[in-house]
Image 1 (cartoon, rainbow, N blue to C red):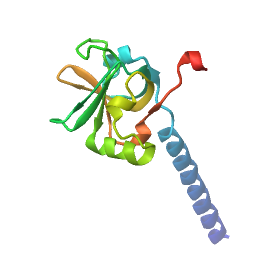
Image 2: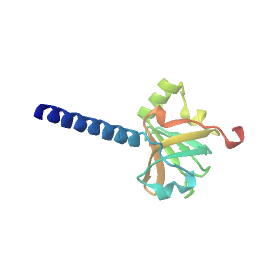
Image 3: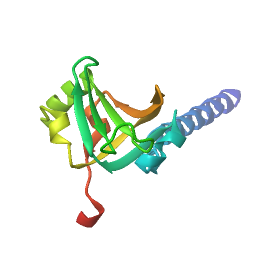
Length: 142
């Protein structure tokens, strides 16, 4: 009888652990909150989703980074920049067949997911993987 109780106790413990792992795994996959590009400054350090039209873009050869901006003037305090690393550019080429991101995304609606960072009083989301960045539909297209 003691062995049966012991085995039942182990089974309950294993099932509880499995249920907990499922809940934790599901929580990790939850979609980040969607924010407006101009509100990104209030979300530094948090993972978010942002949809906006790319109004400015450039390839900084010196920094080995492509920048996509939510405002035509990247100095505008409302601007959210997307900083695509060299690795991110390579992944976009491989996964999405995008050769020149600064040209491809200019004037288009994008959806970007990542952690908001503040570097030198400029607000960015860094993109290192193609899955972080994609085209988005304009609300008028819905």
